[in-house]
Structure formats: structure tokens, C-alpha cells
Length: 332
Image (cartoon, rainbow, N blue to C red; front, side):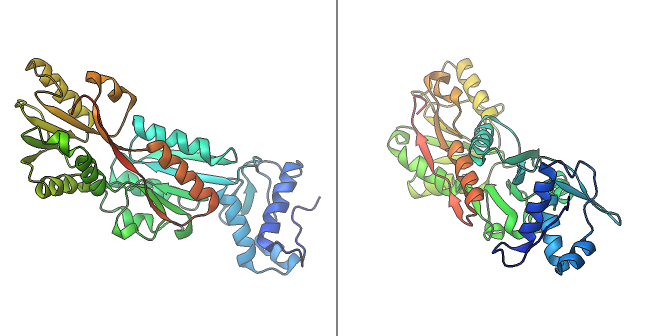
């Protein structure tokens, strides 16, 4: 059986005809794993095609993981799973409970004909660069969490420009890429504004901001709010070795520091929501019940995953700010 067929006047781009015919040949069992495909030159000559047209088809199949290339030898069948239409490179900073919600929502909405491979850079620039360099050209879509890595933009720009999506955080250098992201400055400002009437009963707002992984917009939004509405405030890098004073409210981006504050309040016999307050960042199921409820400022991570999947499936090129809200509970 002929591996590739291309016809004129079909109304279908010829590179897509090449892809379709190779898929069909594999599905029928006439091309098996590790078998060689016709060379680019042979296909060009047989069907009077440009080299770019054939390369486009082979590159698309390569990105989907269906074929692979051996330098100087040609192209070979890598997988007979031709139903996979999208092969997605998903680069997270880390995995935690709310990022897991995002990931599961994305998988649920992207569909069964997509293969999603997840990687983690753990806020390490060297790992970030290596993962992107090693996987450049091997996927149909690249979803990147750049976090606050200063070197992220030039590395991301080495990827195919029309195949990149930015997730969770973006910045001015990445503004031309489609994204689903949080606006941490606006989100924390508006969240505190919504809770202003409850915050007024406290004497001082304290943000625990380590500053290594946390977006700087969180701190800026907090400081702007306190300045605009005349709240006494302080920013500290960690809670360790600190005493809680009556009338303080702690704004806590990290769950590790949240635990430390609650543990300390127990040793001081302080009543949360009366003697002092807490506003945590990022909603988790446990925060609904811990200490009869922890107030949170949080985006909807499940919505973020769904929006991202829809953008990819529909080929949208947009920059979307995911919604955030203040969920008021006993701790305020």
C-alpha cells in the first residue's frame, strides 16, 4: 500500500493530506512502529511539492509524537496512537493542592485526544531552561508557568511563538503570548477592600512575605491598600520567633506560615477572629474548617484550567485575567 497520497483540487492543504494519509496507513497496520517513512526528497519529487510543505507535515507528526527523526537517516514511526491530536508540554512551578485542582480541571476539559506531559521547575532557572530546551519542537502546545523567574521571557521566546500559552503569572515581556493569569496586585487590593469594614476593628495589618516564590504584586497591592485607606501596616519575611499582639491581622500568602501563626496563637491562648485576625491566600478545602474557617483571597483554579483548555481547543489568542474573590470566614 502506498504510504502517502496527495491530490490536486481537493480543497485540503497538501501538508494536511500528507498527515492524513500517513495516519490512515498506520491505522490500517501498513506502517508499524520504527518503520521508515518515505524521505522528504522522495515525497517532493513524486508529488511536485516544495520541501517546506513536506517538512511542515513531518514536523506536525513529530510534535504529536507519531514519528521521530534520526539525523542523516530519515523519519520513522514512533507511535501508532494516531488519535492523539494535541501533545501538550505543561511546565508548572510546583505541585500543591490548588495547582492540582487547576491540573485536573485542564485534563478534564482538554479532551481524550490530547496527551499532556507535566514537568516542574521548582523556581530553579537552570531547570526551567533545560526543560524548555530539551523539549523544544517535541510538542504541539507549550503551557508555561514562568512565576517570577527573571530569565523566563527570553527562554520562553525560543519556543514556537504560536504554540505557547502563559499560565498563572505573566508580565510585560510576555504580553504578546496568550495567557490565563492572576493579577496579584489587583486581586489582593480588591480582596482587602471587600473586607475593609471587618479589617477596621483591628489595629495593624501585617503581611508575611518571604519574597522568593511569591509574586511581588501581592506586596505592592497590600501596601497600596494600606496607604490608600490609612491602615497601620508592616511587611515581614517570616513569622518565626514573633509574638502575636492583640489587634493584629496577618495577611499570609504561604500555608507554612499560616500553620506557624495558628500554632503560636494556641500557645498564647489567643482567640482567632477576636484577639487577632488572619487572611490567607489561595483557597483549599481545609481552610473551610480549620479554626472554624480561614478567610481567603483566592482565584478559582478550576475555572483557570477550564478556560485554558478552551483557549487551546478553539485556538484563541487572548490574555485573560482569572477572577479572584475574598471568602470571609471566622478568622476575620
